[in-house]
Amino acid sequence: MTADAAARGSIHANAVALGEKGLLLRGPSGAGKSALTLALLARFESRGDFARLVGDDRVLVEALGGRLVARPHPAIAGVIEIRGAGLLRVPYETCCTLHGVVDIAAPGATPPRLPEEAEKTVTLKGIVLPRLQVRGCDDVSVARIMFFLQSITTF
Image 1 (cartoon, rainbow, N blue to C red):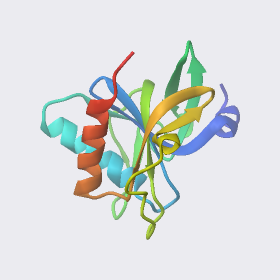
Image 2 (cartoon, one colour):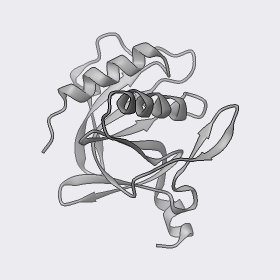
Image 3 (cartoon, rainbow, N blue to C red):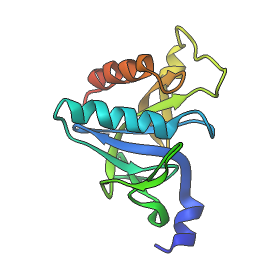
Image 4 (tube, rainbow, N blue to C red):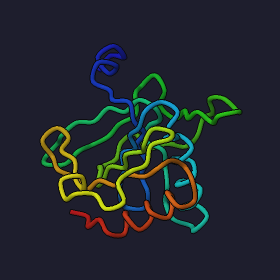
């Protein structure tokens, strides 16, 4: 796949492998996708659990065999933005199976306290995944994501 082909099929999101589960983090620019990704990586690594970046800012997502697979955009694989420090190289995985989606609200917006059933899942490329909405990158969002991950059964 060429870089141009990858750019056309990429989505504005982050992907991360945490333990045995992959998460897609979506949100508008400035919502805190990279900061939340770094916080999750640090939390898992501090517990001695496996945690790797798959992609920051641009991720390729495709349906394969009834699962969604995320890959980093080839032009920025292994690079993450750390606000105030710039672009840094970090260990990364070349792909992961996605088990859930975390949508980060725009700055100033608040996700619903009790989401409707339809808001608890999202369909991407014909595959339904559990979905969590959070407010941004803070300790509460990290804790909610940790509980969300525990509630996801792997297949």
